[in-house]
Structures are given as C-alpha cells and as structure tokens.
Length: 332
Image 1: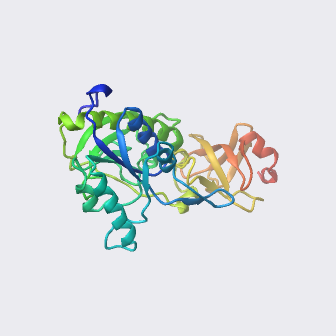
Image 2 (image 1 turned 120 degrees about the vertical axis):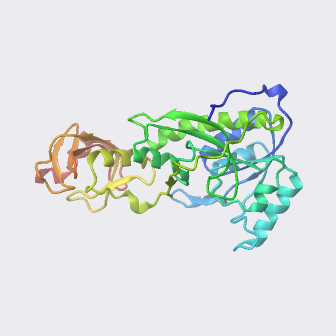
Image 3 (image 1 turned 60 degrees about the vertical axis):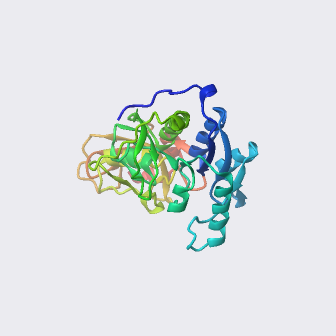
C-alpha cells in the first residue's frame, strides 16, 4: 500500500464537521494536531473520569483535558450499546452525535466498541488511527505485542471502520522501524506523532475522494491481545532474548517482575539485556552472578542480565545501586 503524502494545504482544506473519540495521551496528540490544522471539532467522546493517584481522585482523560481547554463539548458514556447496561447514556450520546451532524468521526484508542449506529451516523463514517500495519496486530495492544514478538517494523494505518475488530479498509499506511532498544513507551511516542500527522492528511483529502480504500489482505492477520497484569511475572522457561523483549514491551505497563531472595514483594525490571553465555545447568530463574553491570539470571536459553530494577514502593535503580542494598547477593 502506498505511504501517505501531504495532499492539501490547510487553507485549501474543506470545512469538515469533525467529531473525535479517544481517551489516552496517544489520542490526545491526534486531537491536538487536528485542531492545530484548523479543523472544527464539534464533539468529543471519551471514557468516564477514572480514579487516579494515591488519593484516587477522579481524573479526566487526556482527551477530555484537551477538549475542555478548547471548549469542545464532551460526552462520556460508559457504553454506546442502545440495548446494553447503560442505555440512557448510549441514547444521550446518540442524540449528541445526531445534533452535531458530523461529516466524520475520528477514533483513536477510545476503549469502547462502536455499534453500527455510530459507524453510520457521520456522513463519511468513522476513521480509525491504528498503531500497526494492518492486518498485523489487530486488537488492543499492537505496540506492546509488536515489540514482544520481535518485529523489526510497525507503523500506523488510517482505516475506514466497519463492525469487525480492526478489519476495515485501509486509507493510508506508513511504516516505522522498531529499534533493538525500543520500549513500549518510546514506540508509543513515535507512533502517536505519526498517527497525528497521518490523520490530518486523511481529513484534508477526505472530501476530495483522493484516497483509495484498500481491503486488508486475508493473510498475515494477527491479534494483539489486551495486556493482563498476570503477564508481568517473568517466565524463565523462555529464552533470555524472549524475556528481554518482553521487558521492553511491558515498559512502563504492566511492567515485568521477578521474585528475588530476601525480598518479600516482586521486584520490577525496567531494563535487561540477553547474553549468550552458558548457564552451566543452573536452575531456571536463579541469580547466577552479580556485578555493577547487572544481575545475571539463568533462563531456558542464555542469561538475562537485569540492568535496572525497582523494589515495591522504591525508586528505579541501576543494578549497581540495587545490589548494594540487597542481602540476597550473599547467597550467590
């Protein structure tokens, strides 16, 4: 599929009536770019405020904060299903969408399933910013799963949404290399910038029908399952290379953890490298060496060197600093 190019200048762009549905920072960056390009955003859908911080105070999403700053109407239904658990909230959202008479609804990491009535309400339907090169990594966690799998390339796809799970026709796509040191945090930021730029190009082109929708290939589809806290515990029956990728993929959330001697709570691992040195038949998951460079842990294949760690309730530390305060090293 061809990559995106700038199709129209801001001054030539059609005055679309744009709506936006999104929740986290990835989405907020796209909303900011759309507004900066001069588009009128009439309505924002975002998830309800969530408890956050030590005080568990209700906190608006990054998208809501951006919308309020620009005095855009915000609707926060818990569901959009008219026959679901919160039908009154869904009907309220339906009325708001119909009254705004949108030309297009941009969707980015919203977090709610869009039923058919949402997809068909805007004149041009709904455009999704998806953080992968579809059909690879459809689903909730494409950034993390790409790193975990060892992919060397990902990207952003602008997709015309249908009722399937990320199965709609592709309008624009642009690749992005995944470096060997990439974490979910660093890749997120790159893809957020890329997605924000591409959705502006798509909106500029939309009224002039200069984009050609292409159906996704039948082959090559993979599913990016939602992240689960239970995945945080490192499984040392995997290879050191697999574990190093997993640590980078789960940085910063849900994190990667292991249990160390003389420490009650699991320790979070922020960074690690895979070494090909032999483990000398050591028990999997045991520390076989400690130095200022890191803690060496035996795996099914190779050694995983932990270079940055964090105790529960403590600060992130280099391996050298961590080892100084850990009595477990005396047992090595």
